[in-house]
Length: 455
Image 1: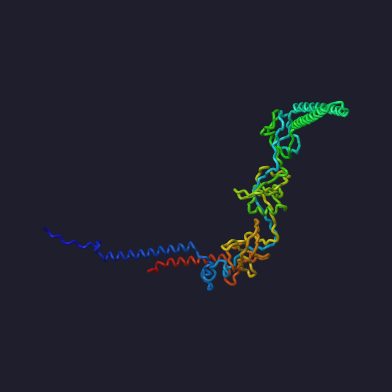
Image 2: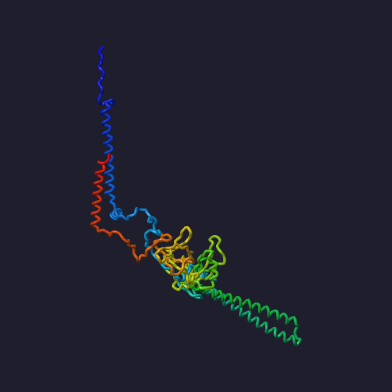
């Protein structure tokens, strides 16, 4: 059996440690150099895409420049910070009206559904749809012939009863004369006197029947009970009408004057009750509150509060001469309740609300502001009353107050921004471009030298 020689060591095997150690060290150094190159290229790209502002660079190179956030410049609008441009208004003294706005409904003072008082055939319709009629004007006629006959019959009955009564009275006078001569019995006189009273009662009944017949004949002329506008016609000529008709002959709505009914909160009802005898102007506006429909006066206030809504009903009366208000129309009511005399007024934008309540910034003579608490009063769309905390003539901040605090320094728009006491002048556009190019070249040079100097 042959003996095999031992195998020679393989240089590529793990036993070849010298070669393996040299290649691993080279790989690590190459990786580090690649990382440094990638980092330098990334830094160069970031610097090229985010160039430093020339003004910042100039300020950084200037000996008197301060680091951001150093000193008191970090507090925005503080006493030591830069001045803030603000808007200013002067507190004025004026009269401010107090209004009550509510949603109202136009309601007519009277609405009448005209019905026939007697039954009969409608002979004439004398009105037009939508016509304005006066009180007592004839609207329609019913055939009057049967009522004329009834009146004649009642008149004849009355005339007959009058003749019988007259004859009975003459006979009674004759009996009384004979009784004085003792030529007739007293019983006959008393009987005749009773007959006279009976005929007098019959005559009264006859006159009443005649009056009823005359009244029924007058009811054949259907007249307007109120003045106003007639609605759409509900019956035509030739139909038989009567008191039991549901639709009637016509519907009349009074439109001048006309009322507007609205609801007021129960908290404001006592004030309206106190001013009920005084003149309070009321204005009716359309739904968009842009068009004035009519001007009237406050009329009345209801005597109880609605428990479901917590409001009290009220009425305002309008002449409605232009007929701009229509029954059942929804309108916006603006009631002038009272006027506050000599009130201190400022713009609404001057009053600000904070954790401690309402306050304003008052401008001092040294161009600093002071935070002052105030009490807000009545307000209008543009101005608000300051009940306490402000005097007439003081200046308040209306714009830019969100950047202020107590003691901040401000600048008025007419004065312009504050100028620096000393410093480099603004360089031209060409100088700025040259400075940017120099900065880019310096950044490229640093980025190229960074990999060579890295260990």
